[in-house]
Structure formats: structure tokens, C-alpha cells
Image (tube, rainbow, N blue to C red; front, side, top):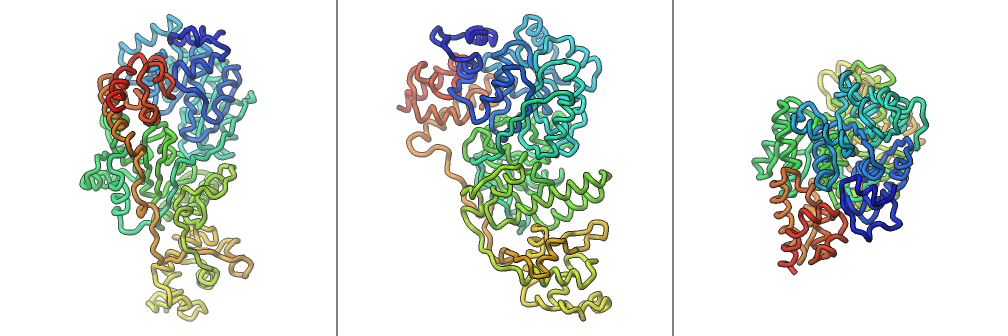
Length: 617
């Protein structure tokens, strides 16, 4: 197929000079998407899919996964079936493709009849390039039979980690994808951002049981994300202060419960921040309205449970806050990965406390999962706690968890403001000894009471006032000991036994400390610590003479998006507006050379933006 044929099949006209030695995929990249080059890792995946190979691609969130299956679907012709887990994501991607001149559609439970007819007509005419469906539709046998009658040439599975019962977003309907792929007999491309080794093995086993796909592991680093963790103190004030300092930016705040999302959203609104709550307890219509409002806003903050966000394709989310500890590193990285998808600087902050840790442990222990799954979940949680409590660079252990190697990043709270540390071996030995001498049968409060020499009735009744460790740590406060115990727990030196009412016990690594074979580094438990909430608000994406033009173009973008009924980033992304503000083109030819300005978008929106640029020259 020639480049001209590929572009013609996509529904995009070309200039005569475009028919060069460029490959069909490269031509579509420029003509349709407006990009002059690929992001790291994209080109090899696109080439494999163009060659009709099976593919499993693990790429960082914001690394451009969707282009890796959209571009072959356009350039190679035929129909690509895309399975995606979120209706709002499908609708936004379809809107963006159609704005770029590509025939695409989505079948959901709420697809109106006229849209269904449009899709059927495009399929019959051979013009539909990408058809999106939700995994839940695959439970309908009639719908599956309908899919088998379509001229599908490739299958793309987005958020492929959902097929794994070891993963953090398991969706049972994803299990139907293996049989569907076998029935269709077409090449399969599976894409995800966060999958540890166990999850990757399960994806391969379930999606490719009789096949050997090419596996692309393209790294997990998101260098544009600032990483920060901070122990909870002062209730929700930390979160409100953090978000209020970033008023005017789009952000997401994740909370553990429905009630907490409502309370935090109300607190933010009282602080002057446009915020809404989102959780599974809201009726579907309300959730859809709020999701749509967020995708079309430049400054809204969504306060949500994890019911919101998987597959969020909004590129200009400037911060993600974890108001409570996530359940694993995979969950954490998936959630914070919704910030800065455009590659521009974005912030993340995670607030956590001992109550979060206890709750997370209890949820695992009290669940009905098999014991091997519980052990795996505890290991995942322990890895997250170690990340939260590390005094060193956050990125090093985070990427190491996914098999990546990194040096100090310079873009996390510990790199920018290295925390004070002390030789904590002596207090660690005191705390671990108190656990052992009291029989490893008691919770934190009792262990701290022994260390501080608190002579209450229970202590005396149990004879713990006669222990050798009784009162050895009385020079340190209750708060100091609790902070140190949390750090020891996060470092894996002690554990909490959920089957024995939260009893603290010494691990194998902790026994090394007790025997003098290992040193312990701790943060001073009562030292002032300005982490995420103490950080100043980030600098604007553009400053100086370019800022007024950038804001004027954002205002125009909002108007054009509202008229078209699409999110603003479907018109142009922030990254493209920044490039336009810096380049200040005054002709269509010059504007066409800016990344993100494809041919159809230039025809639709070019003159309106050029008028504003000319005024600001």
C-alpha cells in the first residue's frame, strides 16, 4: 500500500509533495495526528502491528499507547476492534479521531440509534477504521456473533492488566478476550502501563495461549511527574491547602471511601476550588455528567474513589493527590499516571497514616481470596510502604519494583529537600526487643507504653512493668515512638498480625537488627517535615511575553470545543498551544509545521488561531 493510498483510506486528503519515501504509518503520523516524530518506543510497536504481529506492550502512562494501535488501524486499512474499559474514554478517543478526519465509532449501552446507523453505514462502506467496545458487551452472545460477521483485521486490548486476577483493576469480562481473539483469528495488540512480572505472565497466558507475541517493555519512568509522600497530620487541611495553592489547574484527588470524597469535595468548594465528587454510589447519569464536565474543564478538581480514572485520557491534569494510601504500587502508579499525560510538568502527592496501613492490612486478611493471593497482596502493600518511608530518592525503588534501573531523579521531595536522618539502630532495637519480650502479642499502643514506662493497670497485671525494656525509651514522646514504629514497619523489620488483633511481631530482617547484624536509618520522628503540602505551587507552563497569547488561545479553544461538543484538548493540546505561542506562525504553511497540527485540524481551526497570533505579534 502506498502512502497516498493509506492516507486516502483514512479519509484525509494529502498534498502532492507528501507522496515521498515516507512509510504509510509515518505519513499518517504527520497528516492525521500532526506529529513529526514518534515518542520513545512507539515506532517499533507500530511497525510490528503494521506487519500483523501479535504484540504485548507495557509503556508508561502518557507514553502514547493509543497511537500505537490507532495509527496502524488507519495506515494499514481495514477495521480495528478496540476493547476499552471506560465509556468516557472511548467517547473522547472517538471525538479526537473524528476531529482529525478519521472514521471511528463506539458501541456502548447508551449509543443513540442515529449514531449506530452512522457506524453501520461506515462499516458497510468500508470506511470505518476503529470500532471501540466495552468488555461488558462481550457477555452478550448476540453481540459476539455480530462482531464475528464484521471485517475485523486486528484486535487492540487497552488496559490489558484488567485481564489479570493478580492485577489491581481486575475486570472479569476481560477473561472473554482470549476466546474472542481465537475466534476472530486476527493479530492482537495488548497495551497497559502498569504490570509487574506476575501480571505480565497472566496476560500472556490468557490472551495468547497458543501464540508468542512480541513483548515490548518500554520502561515505566515518567520524569515529568514530581513525586511526594507525606504522613498525615492535621486532618484534611493538608489536602485542601495543597489543592487551593494550585487553584486554576485541573487535578484529581483520590480518596478511599465514598463519604470521604463528598467531604473533601465540599471542603475544596468552600476553599474556592471548583470541585466535584465521583464514586460508584452516584447514579450513572450523575457520574456521566460529572465525568464529561471534568473532561471539558480547564480548572476542575475531581475528588473520587478508584471508580473514576481508569483510562482517563485527559492530557492536561496537572496534579494527582492520594488522600489515602493506595493498595499497591501498581494502583499508586496507575493513579498518579493520570497526571501530565501531555509530557508537561505535573505533581503528585500521597498522604498516608498508620490507620491507612492497618485498614489495608485488614482488607487483605479479612478477604476471601486464596492464601497465595493474600501473600502477594501483602508483598505489594509492603513495597508501597517502603516507597513511602524511604529517606532516599523515590524514583529509584519505584522503578526498581517494575524492573527498571534509575539513579537519583532530582524530581521528588526527597531529592529536592533531602530529609534529615539519624542512626536509628538503638531505638529500633529497643522497639523490637519490647515486642519480643512481651510475646509478640500486642498492638502498637501497648508496645509504646512499655517503651515509655507507662504504669497502667494492664501493664502491671501482665507483669510488663518488670520487663527489661520497660521505660528504656521514656525520653522520647508517644508521637516519636509511633512515627518510628511506622518506619520500622515500612522497612520490613516488623509486621502486624491481622489474625491476632493487630499484634506486632519481629520479622527475619528485624532479628538481624536485634542481633547487631544490621543498622537502621530513620527520620527523626518529631522533626518538622515539609513534604508535599509544604511545596510551593508550580510555575505556570508559560511565562513572560508568551503567557498572554497562550491564555488567549486557551480561551478560543474553550469556545471552539464548546461549539463542537468535545473536550478542549480535542481541538489542540496544551503542548500544541505552547508550541504555537513560542513559534507564533502567521500562515497556514507555518502553522502546519507545529507538532499536533494535522491537516484536518488546520482546515477546521487554523485561521481562528492565526488571527489571535497575528494580534499578539
